[in-house]
Amino acid sequence: MKLTDFQALGIRRELADVLQQNGIHTPTPVQKQVIPAALAGRDVLAQAQTGTGKTLAFILPIIEALSDLRSSTQALILAPTRELAIQITDEMKKLAPAAGATVLAVYGGQDVEKQVRQLRNAPAVIVATPGRLLDHLRRQTVHIRGIRTLVLDEADQMLHMGFLPEVQAIIEQTPDDRQTLLFSATLSDAVRRLAAAYTKDAADIRIQGKTV
Ligand code: ADP
Ligand code: MG
Image 1 (cartoon, helix red, strand yellow):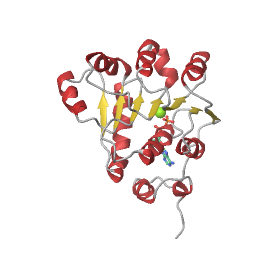
Image 2 (cartoon, rainbow, N blue to C red):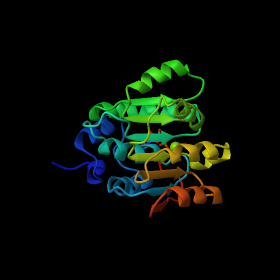
Image 3 (cartoon, helix red, strand yellow):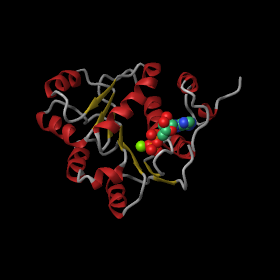
């Protein structure tokens, strides 16, 4: 049987099928480069314009790597705004059932006590804005010492919004041997410094132009 283009990148059949059902048949350039590198366990620094499909580029390898033998949080995705956190969570939820995984969005403006209860179940993946996640770390109501993958999405925007101190404080509480995937529409000096500080031997992926 013919492999789909996503399967050829290392994505399992069930996930590729869900993608097909959602009208997604062919990987974008950033997905083609990021997915194999991330599946191989490498850190990634990826720069591509808005609308080039960066979200699936990190969602798919994370879901592939999730282990249902673990009852702790395995991946943490940081995003600058609640809208983006919700969007990433929604996209992930379409695919996560195929992997039996739980995904939780954590952002400001939501009832903290409700989040505390949801966090007690140690979702496999947490998608969070930096400020609210740091609140939970200080209350010790979230546990990220066991994560394997950290994603910094829209890193340029996150820095532009002044989240560097929060992002640093959060990363300090993740394991040193984590995998780090950093995505940005632009590569400012500040983004490069962030990548230099928190990625190791990252695959350096730059995509020119708009391609979805
Ligand atoms: P970015 O994060 O780079 O700004 P998104 O990940 O938000 O871009 O993707 C932009 C849009 O493209 C979304 O609507 C998404 O569903 C769609 N998309 C992503 N990957 C593909 C693909 N391989 N084929 C078709 N559409 C895609
Ligand atoms: Mg994006």
